[in-house]
Length: 170
Image 1: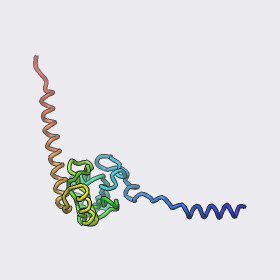
Image 2 (image 1 turned 120 degrees about the vertical axis):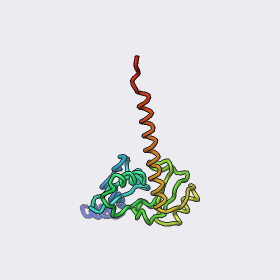
Image 3 (image 1 turned 180 degrees about the horizontal axis):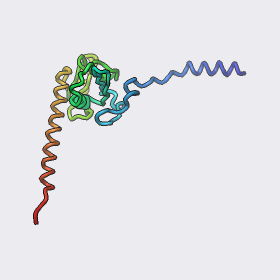
Image 4 (image 1 turned 180 degrees about the vertical axis):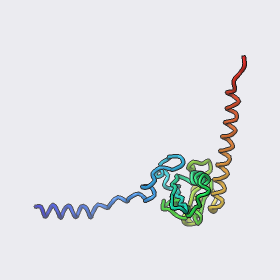
């Protein structure tokens, strides 16, 4: 009887597929270092910055990675990885094929920016969702420009807010 149960247990263990473990970077950094959002929820847009000193910063998006890179400008970037939109595996950001825009809502941005390991996948995405196929340099420029626009808008808001709350004399 014990032998039968043992054999049955072994068969069940072998028959039930193991659940895949989350990618190592998600286990190490489940939240974005910049905004705190779940990187698992945005596993299709997540990024990892590896610096020359061996430290890493994990983010949910190109927007947050661009912000982190600006803050750490003196550290010396060694590698920048981004998730492939469809496969979700990390790939080199500089050699990825990027899509800017389209109908899919972006992550932390008004204009979506998605990365693909293969040009055919990017073209398929554009056919289904719109957008423009481009390279990392253009996607990075767009992210920086958007951050600069956001910063200018916040400065203007702060300036206007200050005028509305100025003390009034009696």
